Image (cartoon, rainbow, N blue to C red; front, side, top):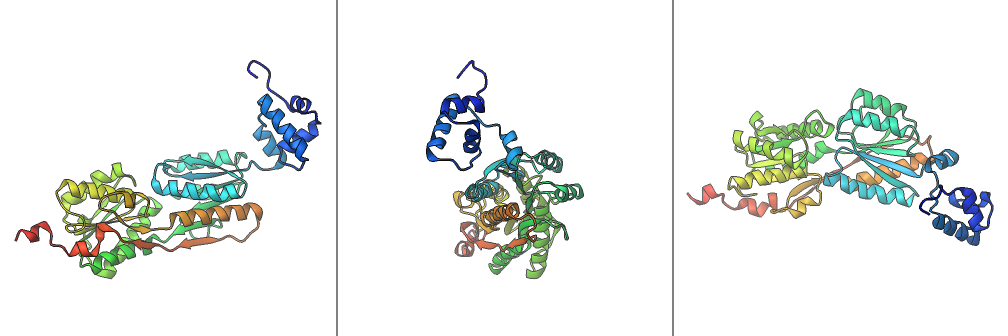
Length: 348
């Protein structure tokens, strides 16, 4: 009704021919007869009436919304997580609100402050950098929070994480068994939780499998993106001659594939490449990408279920879940292709 004043419960009640109390019951999802429910919903639709979500949340004590906050909503692994979380919370009667924080702790602190005002009923947070200030805000939060990722020892919050150290071990073991000895590591920022954890796993696996441990085989990209990974991969190939590259995620691995191709080298005959996360992109690139599956979908489903559990029982025991990784071998490190002679060997 353009040009008229905002519709009210009284106008809806008058149009539906029922009491204001009946209108309130229907619009708040409470029990009412089928006839009354149909008449109220039709009247509200005819009048363009939209319930005040803020007022309603104050009245019923919940917003029916859950937030998911990730570092980069464009990253395929976070898209996968979002889809899984959305399915689980929808089955629980909640809408999902997505926030992309840019991996900035300050943005995450602002988000926590805002959400504490009652805009959502719970939060699933996937922080790349876990600062003392962030941990303190998480502890004090008025809403239930589940963290996707590692937390410092002793923080009493539900969380779900992957074991990146074992993931790196799987990647290095796979390459070492093929006789690869100069296995480089293309990492993201080491001041992040995944960057630090995956570096620790790489160094431990290099020592375990007796492959080369040299500074020129390690490069740190400015971010976990293709754009940041490409110059880092170029720098790695400028300063060293690896026979394999393990990358901290699939986007960095695709950048490595691009840099290798630019130099006329073959994957995996000259250089094998392994990514992490096993996102959809691993099967879309050529050659298809071997990647460590860190269970993104399973982590997301588990986190969503933990949050629904916490909403249903605020005093439930804290749960901290670790998802074991699996290696998905594809063309970029295929054993048969690795046995083929390199261009240098074939020309001898």
